Length: 319
Image (tube, rainbow, N blue to C red; front, top):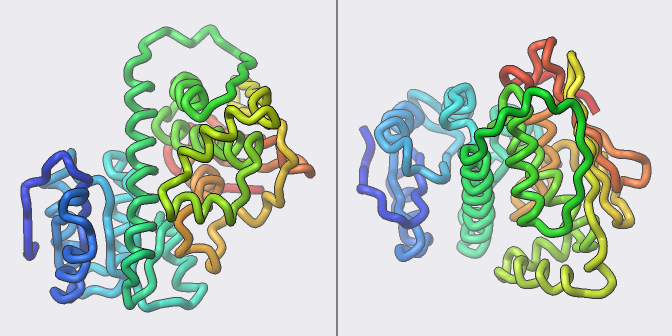
């Protein structure tokens, strides 16, 4: 049975799952009490009970991989198969560092990793990154739910946007066209974010890691949006709805990047505080995702007649 079941507050609520009471206690000590409420469970089966009892308040799952009764991988598969919990970010803490074991976690839907023993700064940085991701998703979803227009007649459209906020609003609008708007929303928003911050604003992978770690990312984005070098750049989006597929093309005005390495979560980057967006979009939202040679134009395709992401999650994903 769960060790602890605290009534959540308006703080970010984390479900920590570990069969070691000392590890659970350490997590509770390391996470600032004024920012986080921690619910606990001792294995995957207990975690499912806690999650279903608190399904409207859990924001993040912090999970041990190896546990009795139901391990972390099986637990992940269970919740990723449930549409209600599919978008919850999962952080897996494990002593396992072998690439094959990390790949198994990624296939089960885990995009965030912490390697034991826990380091305070790394824990806080990864948790903050997951927190920002889930809050952004929920804001985008609220935008989606507020829109009730009939869109059946639209077959294609072309749009431009400049800021991350404009991209979020457009992502919520476009997601309505897809058979599964929630799945589409995650991927569209991630690709739009990448086009602005790494494309038009030229924030490098390394720079973002430091900006996120020091809580200066938003400040730097705003500074660059006002910089004469970047302020006139826009992202151009073309959406096409065909009988058998939906095609989304996203083009930024940046220098491009080496995109192929980001289609999957590299085991060397799994403990970084960012760098998962494109892989998440490819895995969760689209049946095909690729870039042009330069790396400043993404094409994302959903097949609606072949059991792909137009209906339910599919692992039939190509570059």
